[in-house]
Image 1 (cartoon, rainbow, N blue to C red):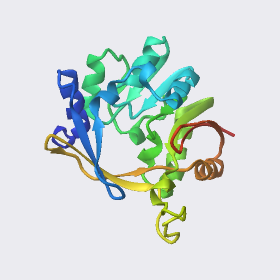
Image 2 (cartoon, rainbow, N blue to C red; image 1 turned 180 degrees about the horizontal axis):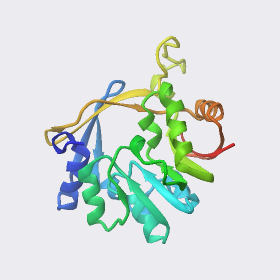
Image 3 (cartoon, one colour; image 1 turned 90 degrees about the horizontal axis):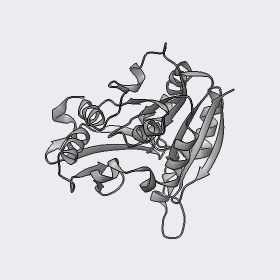
Length: 238
């Protein structure tokens, strides 16, 4: 990812260099702009949501942390004496992780990771499955996961059912069933004038994830529910 279009990495670098009030503006096609305090990306284990704590506790063997960002999950796993590899496309974020002491960093797109290296746990937190972008890409997504997992390995992923964003005051749903899946969102990030390209991101409800998982050779167990329409799932090969 080019530095001039990398608001996330730029913000993480600024935070590490002393700007503790750094904030990223997140634009989307369905809600008003949101503000992401960069401090949140540097949180410790005790500050993480329960779903993330649960996922980190379940992570075993050789672990691939996909979309590692500033590296908070990978850092905790490394400090817990677990073998973890932090995968992140942002070169600036990778630089931040290196400065934080993370040893194994894979600075490349997830879908270009070599499949001759296998992992016991693939970890995708903070709605990491969003990298699939659309439900139409889930077959290719699961095929790549299969190639990266060891026999008996698992994918740990959290996501959210965002249908609540489309509820009317009377509880009815303002969703066009003939349109694309309501969890397919377009985002764009902006940090101090560094504006990233628009990108698609997938939020998927647990029943639809189960359907696609089973269609593509996985068993899914919903491990836990979060506090706001979110959940943690464990997917293992059949």
